[in-house]
Amino acid sequence: MKIGIDIDGVLADQVSAVLKEIEKDYGRRYSKSDITRAHWSFDGIEIWTEISRLLSDPEYVMRVPTIEGAQRAVKQLAGHDLMVVTARRPHTEDATRRWLKANFPCLKQYHHARTGTKHSIPCDLLIDDLDLNIVEFVKSDENRRGVLFLHPWSLNDTNILDYPDQVIYCQEWQSIVKAIEDIDGNSGDQP
Image (cartoon, rainbow, N blue to C red; front, side, top):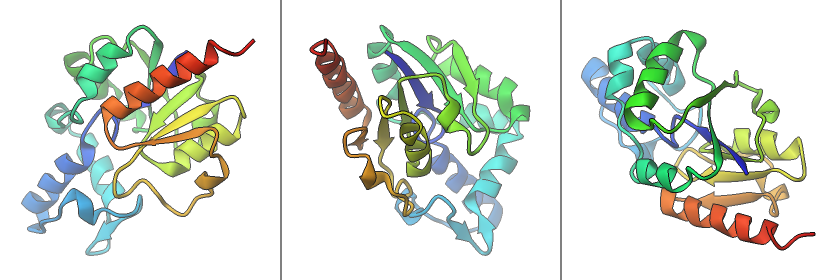
């Protein structure tokens, strides 16, 4: 099975990293549980604007921690055809690839999916933390599956519930590994 794995919110704990920078730069302290929407903002500044600004700094990119359990889980999934999928801006690619090499050396395939293009990712299953991306991916092909890595910001009033046979909800990496093992087991039963 070919599996696409998003970076931010799935491999990289981008929100924790950006919240530290927001506290340092603006004196505002927030926790991950405060970020309840993809387009969350503080003082009129959208979090994604801050993330985009910070990703322009290669030193910042290298400081972003991994999501708990991600490194172990990716090693467990290494028997699959794994591909990194990201909508990060192209100018961040060099630093992003260095971060991936340092933290996930087995992830060699890299797919840049501009915002709004996750339906064109060449894989069978997508692991992402935003319902918008999962819906776009699964609705493009009824044979595709999506794993929504649940965070407080993951659900954004999409019609994700319209795809109950294609979407799996997981709150941590070991649940994702188990879900993929279950999919593999079930796909072997089909003629």
